[in-house]
Length: 404
Image (cartoon, rainbow, N blue to C red; front, top):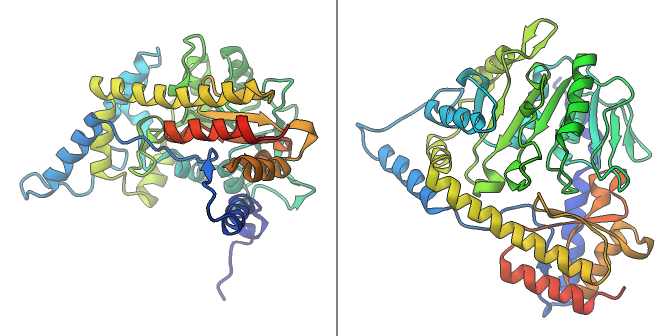
């Protein structure tokens, strides 16, 4: 008799966005003439840049001709794209060979699937609050116990709070796999080199592996802040870095990312690079040839310039939100080196109470912080990914209609 993976029964995260949709729908049905403004969206809205469109079109045209048609590509990814990424990292004084770079169909899938190369007994550490994909994949792979009083047994939670600037410290107890997101989703916080070095030192001492989600590093404007874990000495011996074109080049629907597993990274004397290469060869046929050509265009001088303008657009949105909410007395974190803003709820309101207040009084939808973990309670996440006019309208509505 076939059986199911019962770990799926433990999952809790699906409640958040289902409940947001339900409450928003109920409000709209009761108030059909009211315009709803969404500042909780995690998807990009700006169109692909001209260089990227040109790259995508070039590859599509090749597929229409028998002489230039391409089928399966390299499982590791387009060699030219991997070379471009290697040069991209070299500008940050990080040396990578092509065998250490694996092209993916986006960061999210690899952030979850990477756990398949580790044994079942590994203890996982995550930040709290946390991006749900790390948590849910850990549950699915059977590395937690039951969900009790808002937390999973057997999981190490690294608390992020106002006192530590929403950047966690390394675990005090045993952890074998450590998920870090920098800049952080949902809080918008950014770690310094000193803070990342503490994690690298912990991992080296305890033979742990850091899984470093660098999806938002292109939003960092302070040159003293690290944009890669490999800027930290020793990180190649203990860290996997996963990144994506989604949030800085608009590839949320195009789907291209990359994963870096250094040759120096060993677990029980085994090269994780070789294990991941085997896993990809078995379970992945590579990202779309068309999408990879678009990604290669992102890495061109024109692509870099155009997408820096896209980043600047979103960060201007973040500044508008941050300034507007701060002006009326709300406490706002993030939004300086990340497209996320972490807003403290006023008057000790719960996350959901403040969600309701924003919706009912200002007609703005955010994301309750409690949906990202117990330490997210008392906050709401807003994002800067909207259209400028919509963002300005939402902020104006909050300024004029929110009763504090």
